[in-house]
Image (cartoon, rainbow, N blue to C red):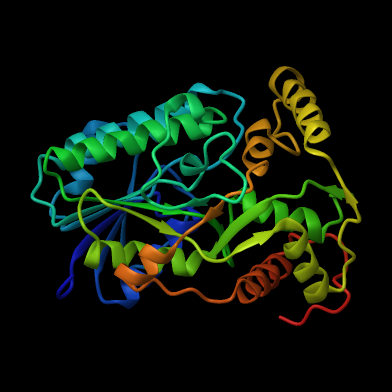
Length: 340
């Protein structure tokens, strides 16, 4: 992007969206946010449009006069009491955004997908997943992944029709400011509050939310329409992550390792109770357990090489996330030795 641009960020009140808005403002761009969350407060520099991405008229008004569209809005949860909400927001909302965007002469459309749809159910152990991996809908391990898979297919089809769509696939975002407590922060908070006496070993790829936001901006500046970019960082085992957290906080990491088959059975029972009785999020959604069984690594080198995406140390991201959680009062027990 050359010079100041008019940017629309859908989902600008969310975790990634909020950091994206802040960085766009810092870079000197004009920012408009389309979000259904009327309680979120932005600076006077931001034009806030309250509305839903499934409302064509609202979307059309929000797009007027825009140069760059960042379609970040979506539901990131792995479980919802009403499963159809995944498709309505993630899939149909994307269809509406892209259909209405086609009416305007946009310079770039950056669509926020997810690394989850690249993983599928169970890739081969030791395999490396990059942007060339192709999955089928039948390989998606749950309703969230299916809805995001369909949404990305819509984005890819729009690119084939000539719309300037660049796709980014962020890995697990971590860092400060996660007001809605997305799954990675929920996992971190569970550790801090001693809610996880055991763990399921898995391979994770976490990236700082601030670097993910910068990756979106770089995708608009340097990304090629129709291309995917994995916005990730290092691959780390959960046991290694817990060890880092133990060293950062002085809190003991869980010592018991749960086998996959047991975790899956417990997740099925927990989710059934959530679906039919409590209607509150289960401790371990089935989709999350299925995704955790992967032994494949995610390769983010394309985003680093072609976009210049920064990659700060995961320890720094964890430290900043913990400091924020303590500062806003989400932790309910003392942290022995943490120094933010």
